[in-house]
Image 1 (cartoon, rainbow, N blue to C red):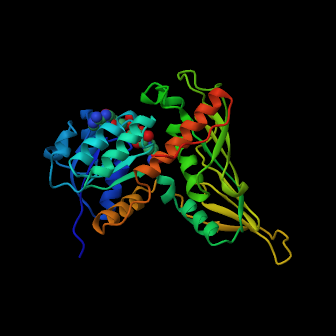
Image 2 (image 1 turned 135 degrees about the vertical axis):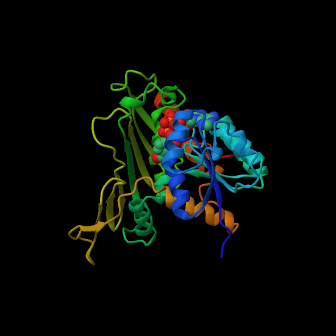
Image 3 (image 1 turned 90 degrees about the vertical axis):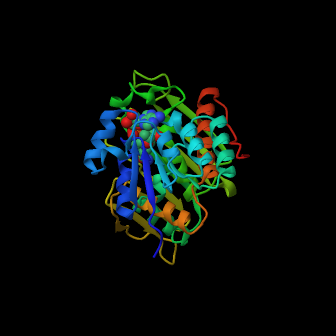
Length: 335
Ligand SMILES: NC(=O)c1ccc[n+]([C@@H]2O[C@H](COP(=O)([O-])OP(=O)(O)OC[C@H]3O[C@@H](n4cnc5c(N)ncnc54)[C@H](O)[C@@H]3O)[C@@H](O)[C@H]2O)c1
């Protein structure tokens, strides 16, 4: 029987999904932490975590040698500080996306992860979303032929979130939420070699950054891509994603119970679409935790490690730079 994982979570808002993920995996929850006592106790009551395991200072978790895995769900600006403190103490760390908001911070996380005995994973949750896992399987099987264009959008109304840390100019919507669409395209298609973007600002009065950005991108072998991010949109949350191949087309979304697949017949004509049922689970924290626990227990590589998270941040920052300068930008993946 595998060793029982002992887990802790820091940041008890979205972080509650990590506690649920760890619990559904069967981990022991040794501690939870939030600097806000109200949020801490709300989560503590919800998950039956006794008061002595509730902490307001994350250093209590850093210093607890019994803990194997720490999930981190604090504001993006603090990802570097908490992840590095935990990694220096040898903890295995699953930190929320985006890895960080600046190139300096991603470099420090990479360096600290390289030097640590613990493993590091950035929570690019779309890689565990059933519809996108299925899309990856279909693309890799060659069913739609050679991909020549792929697009993904992240449309999410942040109207009620702009008074928080999310309104920090460094937390541009393209990196905060847009990193999901960028990471998804990187996973499905590869690393863009060049990006060009436009941005506009018409919806969120409380932020200084553009609330809508569209970026086109070039991949190897003349493959093209597009990412559209709107953080003020007047519609329900969607990450509609379309992959166009030489033998078919795939349309999917993390909020839809079906995906649509077009393929061609032996004469190259497009057949009637197939509808594929998928589980709607846009935040599959249970699968994410399971994959990380497997990497920790069996000393496997982590797919979304610090360098992988850094590449996604690099593309997002390149898109933001292009939208500001009006010039194409080539991401620098030299970490
Ligand atoms: N994967 C996803 O789709 C997804 C969805 C939502 C949020 N997130 C990410 O999760 C993280 C948290 O987002 P959120 O929506 O929960 O934010 P939030 O502001 O609602 O909650 C953050 C919590 O962290 C606590 N906190 C802040 N600093 C702390 C510290 N130093 N020590 C302990 N607790 C601290 C706050 O008191 C608060 O309870 C962010 O990085 C965000 O980008 C990811």
